[in-house]
Image: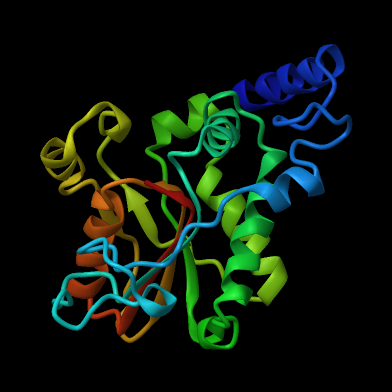
Length: 232
């Protein structure tokens, strides 16, 4: 019932405030093609040391048994227009932005030439705690994963569970984020030998992605990468 009411609320909002480009105001789209083309692109880097890295692969000297093997992102979160897009999607509950942002992520995979490499991977959206999911009405990471799956025909796995209702990471400093997210996830089934591509909207310090990578590696996942719309 709550989800139906939220959906109705979003439909009423669309009627009262017609869809328009969040950057230039052009009608009927949240991000028009010219504005999308002008957005700055984020250079790929090792998430552990923040230094440049081809294809976002984790540097050999940064790699441990518990770290991500690689990290792909599309846009710098520090840019005001990009931050606005993400915040409207995430906090203003505009789930229809998933198509626009998901396509940006899929485009980045193709730009890096990794579409064939990721064919053996399973998409794993970062889950929300059930309480937060009930409040929001959708998991933004799952919607983004669906768009990537549609582009590359990759499987989406739902075996990752969020068992701890954590404080919002955005409100915390780097060290507090690590403590806050520790032990927040669990696995619903065996995943040994699988390759995973974690999907989320934003990575800042990478604490959430690193915590999940640690869990997956401890369960003997063979490889773990992550992709986000934005980073920074």
